[in-house]
Amino acid sequence: MYLDRMIFPIETLGPGQRLVIWTAGCTKHCKGCANPELWETRGRRQRSTGEIAGMIRRIAAEHHIDGITISGGDPLEQAHELLELLDEIAGITEDILVYTGFTYDELDSVLTVEELAHLRSRVGVLIDGRYVEDLNTPDTALRGSSNQDIIFFKDELRERYEQHMAQGRRIQNVYMGSRLISVGIHDREQ
Ligand code: SF4
Image 1: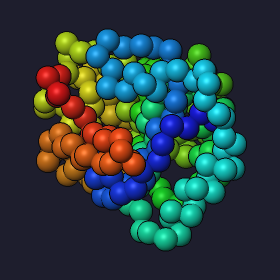
Image 2 (image 1 turned 180 degrees about the horizontal axis):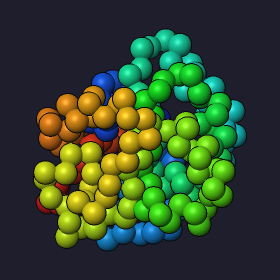
Image 3 (image 1 turned 90 degrees about the vertical axis):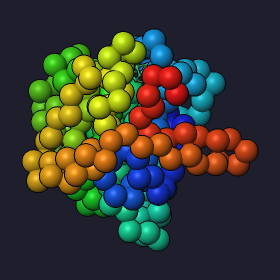
Image 4 (image 1 turned 90 degrees about the horizontal axis):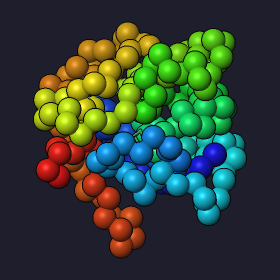
C-alpha cells in the first residue's frame, strides 16, 4: 500500500484525538486539491498492510485514540489493500472515517458487492466525491465542497460527528521535521 504519512493526535478531521493516515495515489486530479503532492505513486515504496497495521497498533498501545481517519490521495484507489488494512486494525476503534474521491455509487468500479459490504462493516463514516472548488463553502465542516456527502455506516456515530461539525472548519498545523503540514479542511482562499 502506498502510504505518505501518519500523524497523531489530530483534532480537525473528525471528532476527538485521531490518528490520521494519508495514502498516496489519486488519478482524479481535482482542480484546487489540497494534497496534489499525494497524487503520484511513482518512485514511492509500497508497504505491506501488516507493516502499516503494526505502526497503528504501536500508537494505539501507547495512547488513547478516539478514532482513525484515512485520507489521501484516494484510499479507495487501493481498495483491496484498504480492506486488508481495515481487517488488520479491526478492534482498535469503531470510529473509522474514510475519505474518497469516488462517489458512493461509483464504488462498484473498484469493489464487488461483497467487498462493498465488507467496507461498510469496517468503516464508520465515509465522505465521498471529488473536490469541486466552486462548491467550497465555509459551512461544509469536514468536507472540502458541498457536493460531497457524509455517509454513516454506523449510525451510533452520527451525534458525535454532528457535535464536531457544529464547531465548523478548523485547521491544525503540525511540523514533521522541517515540513509544516496544515491539517483540516481549508477555505478556498487558504
Ligand atoms: S479526489 Fe481528493 S485527493 Fe484526489 S484529486 Fe480530488 S481532492 Fe485531491
